[in-house]
Image 1 (tube, rainbow, N blue to C red):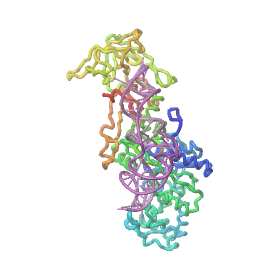
Image 2: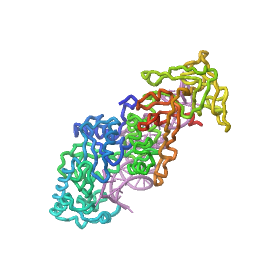
Image 3: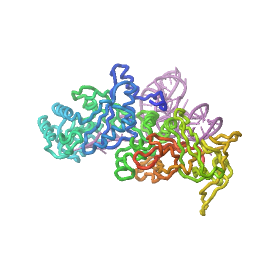
Image 4: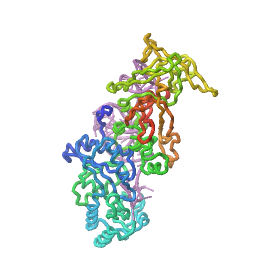
Length: 553
RNA sequence: UGGGGCGUCGCCAAGCGGUAAGGCAUCGGUUUUUGGUACCGACAUCCUAGGUUCGAUUCCUAGCGCCCCAGCCA
């Protein structure tokens, strides 16, 4: 845990449960699991689940398994499996040797299915999907028993074995638990346990053509791994009676308990694999790791440190109430960590040329600049200064309003770590745009302090024109232009057309020299990181600095 | 109209019968060679109505509101 993370974890109901189970002696150590389905990349919502599951065992002692819920070969891919492992590791968690797959248990699950059949608690149903849906009833009325519900055990066994042997096509038959077609809980109206899918599985190939449903596989997998606390999101609350029913009627080696918490939602963000997959497939974003994506991979590429994600999840808390966390809370966690860790540099995003008229032509010098005022150990570096510079266009106004402290004709400001300069003249092009500033500097203010004690109201960043390096800078903003994308239907309609602004910037040379993957601060602008994929010098904006001036104007 | 869950500050979220933590946001102010950071201060009577109690956000009752469930998805 880094020092930027809050020390005292806030109380939450899961910690209370785990703590109570430990003190009561119900468990001597706790075992959790993170069970992703490899059908997409992990996003910040998964990060919450990861932090909860791994965090709990870090705090209370025990272990957390990484288990792929690979029960549906029609939807899952190896690419996702690889990405998931990389993302969990990057987030800072380690499952040790406890890497599992639901598919590891296919044989045992199958044996247990036969066990249910033999006990008369499961049957093979020949109904078509449509018939099954019709007979399931509605939310307010119970369902009707399948005409095949009372088949003899021997016939069920025979048919189930033939399903396994591949004698029937996809969808021809299913294995169903015989529970209660009249239950108010639809999950108990004879849920399907197995279905036929003639698609090769990434791990088991063509060994199996019948695959267990989530409800059948999950709890039994938990039991096989001796999971003590099976944590999932609220929508599985209704499934808990089925989870318990199966554990109760099967000779499982352990008795896990399921607990549900509310999933994470963030303003201006969509966290649904279905939609994220669609954005990638339809080219609305660059890929799963597009810096605008709420995926772990996207955030990593945007320069967000894993510590910030962990801290954000901690601050957001864990509860059972549906909620939507303000994006500002995420940004705050990112800035908090970066403020303490990021090295400072100077870069000009929208350059305005400045000529220091009284600075000797052709000469230059190197000035000392602090790398990180928050961290003395970060040391200092040299920044080249010369007669021609670039400053930010926003830092000059020909006719400034009252509260504008920066440069305007006649005013004096400080160039950070350099000199005080005074604007003498603004040169314009034919259209009236200011294209160059003529200024003078005070040689006595080298380093940024005036011996006579006079003060300036602004300190500005700058870059030496002759030494500056050109770089592409990608300014990202929210992927959506409304806080609740999709609230009116298709979130594609809410995509922010201005979510990416690509500009050509002038940066201090040290930025081209450094090869690090670390996120840095461009002073007065924000945090940026070298793009991990682009060939040339390309920086992605992670998040801007707070800007109370911009906010007030 | 069935089953399940949830309702505490603008947004998250503690609280578990003894008189409303914290974070984000917001608004003031101090410091400052980043209009950044840091620091100081301001900012809720707990969905409603009854009831129990000396005392209720916490217990009971009745309402109201929101979310989830009718995949051979997870």
